[in-house]
Image (cartoon, rainbow, N blue to C red; front, side):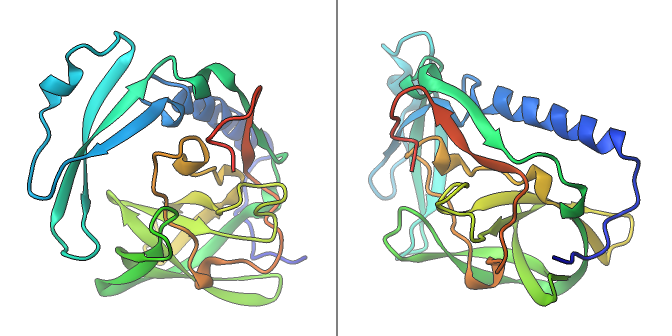
Length: 243
C-alpha cells in the first residue's frame, strides 16, 4: 500500500499527542453532556419553541436539558426541540472503552485543498432520515491519492471546522458500521491540509440512538481499509448505542 507523503515529524511527540487525544475522547463521551449521556430528543410542533424551564422542572439532579434546532427537510423551516442528558445514563454505566487501532504514522496524510468560491451545498444522507438527504455546506475540495487511486473528498463546514465523514471496508467489521468522522487540520499553506486518520472517531450516533449522523457520500468512501483511529465503543452489556 502506498500513501501520499506524510509530514516529517519526530516519532515520540505524535504518539504522545495521540495518546492524550484518546484519553480526551473518553472524557468527552462520558461527560455529563457527552455522547453517552443523551437519552431523549423531544421536538416541538412546527413553529413552536419549547419551554426549557418547564422541561427542567422535576428532573433528577443529574439530568441536563438543552435546546436543539434543525431544518425541516420538506419546508426548509427551522424546527426547535429539547435534548435530555443523563449523567448516570445506562450507556455511561455500561461503557468500558473505545477500541482503537495502534498509532500508525503512515496514516497522517497531506492533501491539497481548493476552496470553492461561494462554497457549495452537498446532499448527505443521514442515518435516521430513511434514505433522505440534507444539504450541508462544503467550502472546498480535498484531493489526494491513496494506494494509487485519486480521491476528491467533500468535508463539510462544522461551525468553522472541516469535518470529513468517510467510509472504508472496515465499516461493520472492525469499525462502526455507518462510517467514521475526522476533523481536517488546516496548515499555514491555504492550499494544503492534513488528514490524521489516527484521530478518526466514532460519530455521536455510535454512542446514542438520539443522534442523526450524516453518512459518507460516495466520493468519501475509500477502496482500502483505513486501519487507524477509533474502531467502536465497547459496553459491558448490550446497549442501544451499539450497531
